[in-house]
Length: 336
Image 1: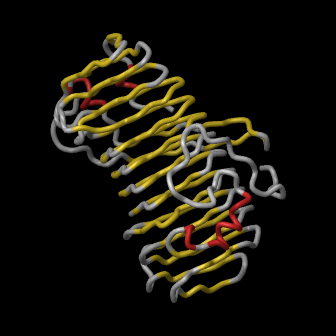
Image 2: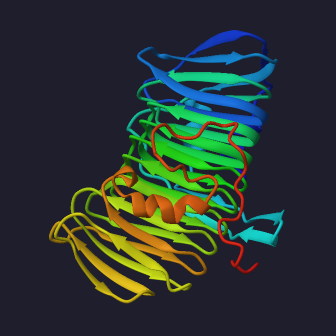
Image 3: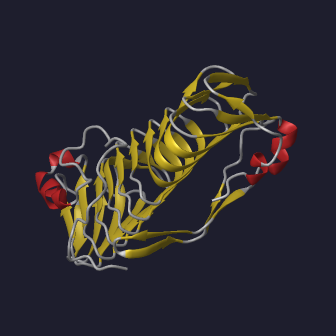
């Protein structure tokens, strides 16, 4: 996927072998490209971008005159294809509209490297973009526009807010205690776990991964969770109007309050807390689970999901980057 190609084809980069700071404006753009490594994005209250890298990295600082004219209104996400144990899986091309950046000029810091890297950005950074082929990417306490594209790497969002696009073909995506204005997430084989999150608009899709939105809240907007061969589980706190569909005929609801649930084993509608934001959950060949609050309060749901290797029996901390790869939860799921 080409992210801000215009930012990657300008002046030669300066090598960085340890820690180096770059003075930036009020709302810079940060663009990171790593082939293989452990990448952490964090924030601080200083007008500098700090690049810490165990291996030499090429870093450029681009002035607003070189950056502002090239900021796109939307990103064109290229199609991606991988081979899996079930055969080839392709994620189609799509576009992602970028929100309007904060007013004023925007300079940029562009870095390319490998290995362990920590990038500390100003708290008011307008946008952070990361491309990572293998390893793990973590965002800590960033609020703004973010784009993450990984091939065989996991992505973790800790206390992240704003609008973002996240793609990981083979890796797991974990979000904890985060609040999203608009979030698009897609994986080929990786699971997704959202824990204690709030979403205005969210679209999460996977081909073979399972999706768990646990103890989550929804604000006015649209929410859609869809897996072709994995399971989908929604644990809701607050109000919502949920529509669920399972092509395998396995929609299970387990609410501990007066939630109104209608439907049959294939399709159900649930009015949670009197109704609210519209939420849809569907799986073509897997199961869909609907419940109130945290999965820890629903032993039956935990038991049903115990066949999914990467969906923990008790949700505490998000799984780390070294967790074992997902195994198929149901041997009866057909290949694509």
